[in-house]
Length: 273
Image (tube, rainbow, N blue to C red; front, side):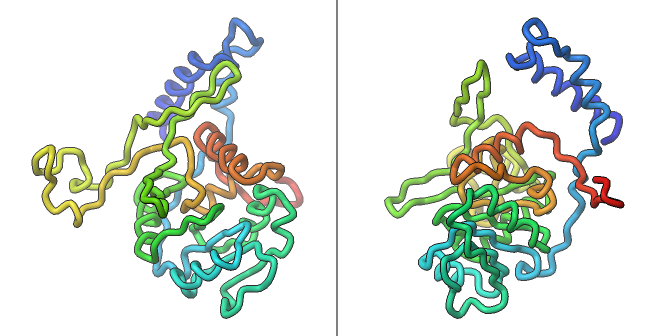
C-alpha cells in the first residue's frame, strides 16, 4: 500500500473499531492503539496482479464439491472443454480428461473438500458451484471474469432466477454486533466500470438509451450466492473452514472475506512458512 492508502485504511479500521462491541476498550483489555499497531506490522496486502485471459478454457476451473448426475450433464452441455473438479459418486460419461474427481466428497464437509480442490487448481479463476444454479453459458463467465480483471475484488457473482421466476441476488450487508448476526437487504456501495456504467448515463430517469449494450454497475455485497466466480489466489489466501458444511461454509467465507485483510501467500522456504 502507498502511504495514502495505508492512512485511509487506518482511518477505516479506527472507525470500525469504534462501532465494534467486541473491541470496546472499556470492556476488553485491548486498545485501539494495539490493534492499529498490529495492523502496521501485518503482512503485505494482496496486490491483485493483472491477469491476462487468452481464453476461458485455459483461465477458469469449475469446483463442484457435490455434483449429482443431472448437474454434471448440465455442466457438460453449457461449458464443454472447461476444466472441472467435481465430487461425484461415479465418473461422468463423456466428460473426458478435463474432469477430475473426488469420490469421497459426499462424506466430508464442503469446506474441507473445497480446500483440497483448490490445491489442484492451476487457472487464475475458479467458478465455485455449491448448489444447482449455473450461469447460462460462456458469455456469463466472460462477464464475471471481466469484473475480476478490471477491479480489485475477490469474488463476482450474479443473481439467480428460479423456475418460478423468483429473482434472488443474495446481496446483504452483515451486521455483527453484541454477539448477534443480522442480514440487511441493502447495499451501500457499487462498482462503476466506465462511462457507460455510471449513474449519469445520458437518458431520462425512466428510459435509459441503448441499455442492452451497456455494462451496468455491480453492487458490493457482504454475502455470497451458492455459485460465484473468484480469483484463485485470493480464495486460496482466505480458504474455507474445513469443519463447516453447505451454506455455513459459504457464510463463514463471506464473513471472513469481507472482514479479514487479504495478504500475499508466499511459498515456504526450507520448511519455514
